[in-house]
Length: 202
Image (cartoon, rainbow, N blue to C red):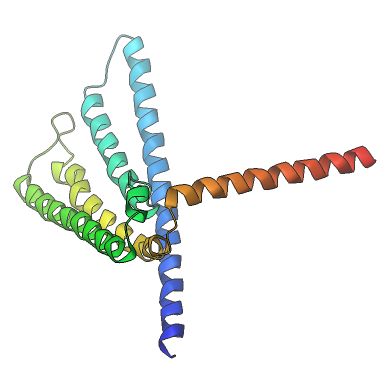
């Protein structure tokens, strides 16, 4: 019996960590997208004026890659990557659990290798600088490879308990999201109807 309170406390801590990380990643992605938008608009305006930024292509590509890595981690935390819930849920419970574990091991293993390879890449790039911005080390711009891989692993592990519980219970994340949106829309419609009825009574 003593295990249940401990398990509940662990669940609460994981949920809080997941929410905090989700908030952080959302703001990181938002800021990166704003910066990329500013750079693109500025580059277009300067080009229309007959000039161009020598660093635009290089910097914009780096910004886009950073958005991709952080966005991928955020999608992993929310379990929004492309999946096959219908196929998974059609399996018997033992096979479903086995398939889920196998998939997680493969995904996490891939990103462990990616983090390791990213560190090797950073060692190779030591001393290199960007072509257009010679004061910027390439190691900093490419550090997103191991950082993004580690973030993806952390997000995958933080979202795993809830995903495991829903999958074992036979709940599809895709269907659950659709049902939640439908229920929210119905509640909004009911609230609007009540508001209109009150206005009509007056």
